[in-house]
Image (tube, rainbow, N blue to C red):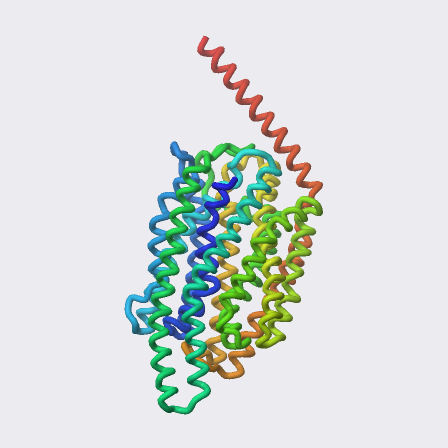
Length: 491
């Protein structure tokens, strides 16, 4: 369980570093126009989302090796993922044209997301092939989510603490520039701003190398510590049906559709708030020098909350825990958006938001195996579709993230956001406030409404468990009969 959980850290470390820092990196460090940034973030996520189901199908069609069917995909694509991640945060030249910058960062973004999909899709599917029953699988998911939130914390800490120093220096230089006339002090502030920009670009690259090193180490732990085991009604053989036929089977399963769309809107809400948090703190809340510390507090709270939500999950059921946890996010966003430059209030609300974030990490991924099991007992002849289930699930998560960041950046572009500027017009500030609270809250309420109609409760989970046990007994008896008949034929 521990080695499996460690394997999930690279995805969260890299994706959350991108989620929290990529927008401000491209806007204020690379100083790319907001329109091009919105294209990179939206089209890059759209590309990533489209490739996920395709990769899931290719993984399903691949055969078993001596190391298993799923783990080799993660291992052999890892070096390319590390390289493209480091290049994503590099700046080849201090000054590039808008078109060249767009081509470079869009290409690196697509390469990284493709290789990360080749790692994460088989890794996610591996949850179904660790052995044990539902309780063991839920326990493994809790281990995984605990490590993934810790990976998120580690990634944001590494990235935030390395680059946060330079963002704080920039904020100080901006304050000096805004508070003086054009004299020697203002000239010194301008020079400091230029020097800080160069150092900030170097800091982002150093942070990427460190996160890439953890990516490599976690993959090694996964390879050495996990062995794939067959699950009931699964063979881990090559998928026999076509891509469209498999996709049709997946999207026709009602519990899966409701879980996916509930997860999509909840993920949209969290990722929209997350993607605009750095810009909101810097330009709307007046706390640009502290946003990396607030991110750290939020993620520490999420990490420490995982055992609490796992306990509530077991005691009260998954759907009840999901509703309680997601509801905590709404007052936190309202208070943060309503209060300006009050660090203690922001710290308390970051703790509440972090606790709610833990629910989004744990509960949907804990509910997905139940949906797959429900599908298998209702469709016993449709086997080896687990990678397709998980890849489509990841597809909607990434598609939601791409939409959230792309729409946010495009809205800032139309509001008049100026890359690298120290002060913005009131329309930009208002847009940041709307993108940080009202829009995510509306999306979250839609997601909770869809979760209300999710049909698999604790009673249905017990029924699925009994049906899987019966199916497993039937498979063992059939294999035993086949083996006996073969021996008779030989004799």
